[in-house]
Length: 239
Image (cartoon, rainbow, N blue to C red; front, side, top):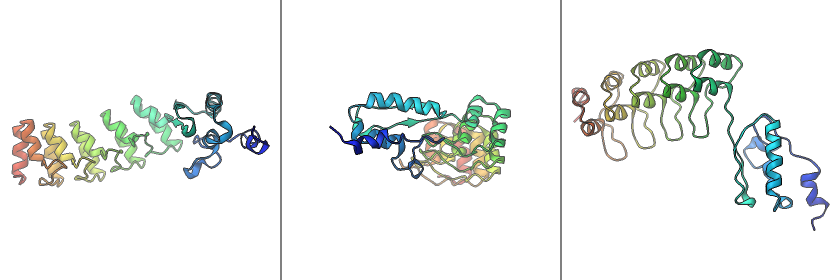
């Protein structure tokens, strides 16, 4: 039987959950609050009940829960994801709501658990108005997701020439590579985006860079069998 000291860790002072979904010590990034309580010895064997209490507390705090794994009670973890007003507005393509969220002070550089920023989401939706709004309100034009994909690389890959122009005008670095060593020029060449290739070359993209497989932009153009892209690259000095 556990003594009063053991029980007190849970019973004496329920952990506080703040708006970030963390406990009393959570802002340091270390275990604290509810998560620390779940891992406390007094809670072992009582994870289902703890899960219900945790869910109730989080919902009361206005947070949403995507997953609460309990297969290994000794290392129980929580995974939180909350769509903010700005993120939801971008996902909906709603410029007016996005503007309102920014006026309320929401972070224009917020990202999901994969590092995908709201700017990257706006680019995926090919929405120049949203992209321009975010950039004008402080979004980092070169911030990449966890795979290293920058806004310019994403726009180039999808052939969004208008967005490529906008990003370059706002200071996007033309040769930033992702975790595969691919640059915006390479992905545009691979996908046969001749108009984007032309814009990137005029912005100073290097034609002699190679990815981690050893392929250059010209190699990718040859594999995609796009003659116009190949011609543009050769005219820029690619061999």
